[in-house]
Image (tube, rainbow, N blue to C red; front, top):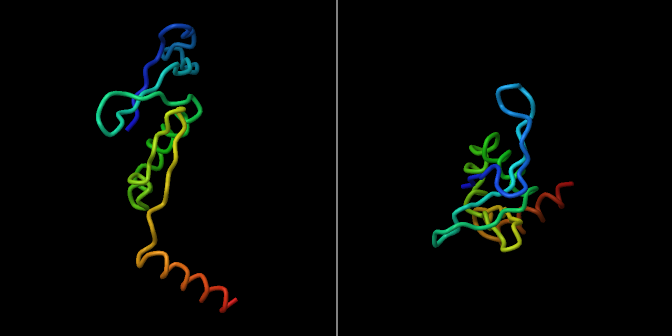
Length: 102
């Protein structure tokens, strides 16, 4: 889903992996959009996506969020939950029943 490129123009050195210190920040990130190629990913979006991918990947698949991923042109992203089973009418009926029970 996401691959990062470290270094590049303006990329700082220091903080190497062998000294136990923090790694230098990623300066670029790309992801393969549906038609191939690569796309810009905002640095904060990159951090969030890497965290989700490494620690919540299974949950993303189970909930269907992996299918609701959209990378926007400005480097931000959207995750959408899939529609509830039975469609919007079933969700509205369930919400009304829950409200009536409360």
